[in-house]
Image 1: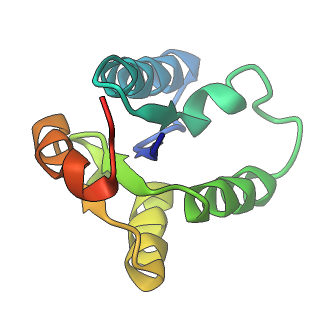
Image 2: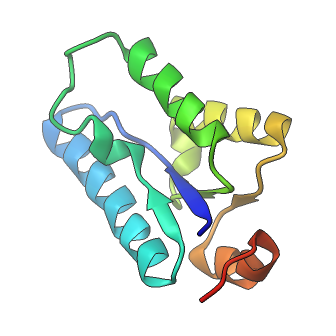
Length: 116
């Protein structure tokens, strides 16, 4: 099964804004799962660990996980996130296919080797 990394804003100006970002990414990840692909949603990985370590620890770890994925799917508001913009740059450098809508990802799912 192919693994799709979900990229988009995580941090927010307050805890509610951060939670809304996480929920937006979670909803997209659930749609990926329902489509027959595997979703890796880093937003949920550190949901209750904010402040436990420096931002760089989480961002570096997210990049490492993303490099092991078959594709990246960006939330619609990804460009407002410095971290997601970095993920896009790294994905491009590593040749990881990037998608900006679920529909676009599903059209290309066969090229990724998805077997339903």
